[in-house]
Amino acid sequence: MPGENEILNQVHEELRNTHTQLQEYVDKKLAEERDSGDGEATAETRQMVDQLNDAVDKLQKRHDELVRSMNRPDLAGSGAGADPEAELRWSAFTKYLRYGAGEEGRAQFGDEEYRALSSASDANGGFLVPNDFESMVLQEASNAAEVRPQCQVGTTSRDTVQMGALSKPKASWGVDGVAITPQELDAGGLRIEIHPLQTIITVHNDTLQDAEADIAGEIQSAVSGVFSEMEDDAFIAGSGAQQPAGVIANAAVQNRAVSLGSSMVDSAIQALYSLKKTYRRNSTWAFNSNTAKDLRQVKDNNGQYLWQPPTQAGEPPTFLGRPLINPEGMPDNAAGAHFMVIGDFRSGYKIRDRRGLTVQRLVERYAEYRQTGILVTKRTGGNVAMAEAFVPISG
Image 1: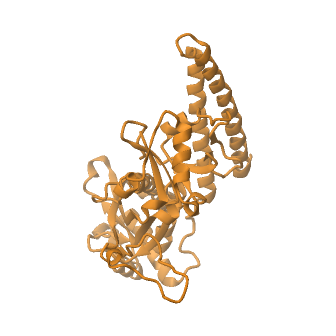
Image 2 (image 1 turned 45 degrees about the horizontal axis):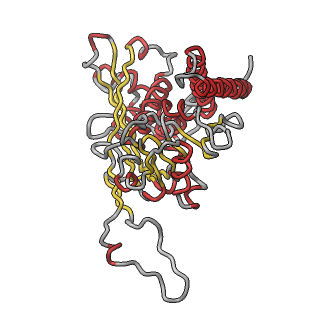
Image 3 (image 1 turned 90 degrees about the horizontal axis):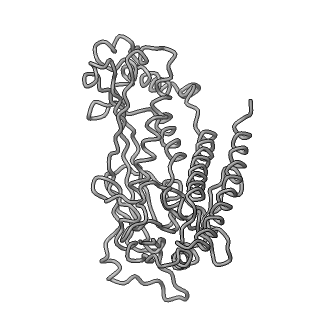
């Protein structure tokens, strides 16, 4: 059977071939619109454009899934070869997932394991998961995410992170030193509130009692995908109320918006070159999949398509020569909607994670279905650090 690398290369090749077919039918559609009396292409041509656009979407998703699978951490054997305390924590964690910590579960633990379980409990009765499991969940969630890998990410032990107010460090030539104005000092600081993000997965009790089932691995994969989707939506468009403050929801970013004119090409170029060179050379486009389908049909003034598939397997597609991501939390193109944004996410947006992933078993809530709920909670926050690093396009 072909290995993952070979399959990835096959999908990449199919993606490029399908994109070439799409371009051919878009050319045909444009010619029919030009030559027809009513400015409409035939229904058959329009249908083929839609089908090929959907096929490109599916192949791009398959391509990305293969890349994530190849980067996915292996949970098997976690805790093995670690220090004795880590092994105890891992053993206590896996038994907690299966049996809980009540009267029935107590009999499954050795004395040392139960002490490890008790020492890792949080104030709400949950279990503070071992570092190995937390790292794997966060790594897989990051691999599956669109926005997080583009940003500057750090950790914190606080519920609120207060950062400097300046858009960039002050600098000066000469011997007179660097001055910071009182107005800049009074401007306040960047505040990142840390918010809990929770998800529940239900596991059938028969599965929990199956000694061969990889309970920890299944929970890891399930919650990682949910965390990545929720974070993508919040980091790009979150309101800041009980969730991170998103890029396109930031008032200072919105004030930099380019209005969509009669030419998508001109508007996109204007947005790209409204960024300073330092941000432009590290910039990434962000828009959802519906917008991507429209942009695959857009040409520049030289007849070249602006959206291009990955040049090599494992790389992102590009728009106007810059890489792109598709956070689905971005709105569709509509009047007043900031449906596209170009920016240097690493310079312009900061994410802070509070360490300490917790797991709590919910036994009674789903007992009639013979299932146990597993509540997983992580804490994170994000905010725009430099509005000048972004330029949105509004419909």
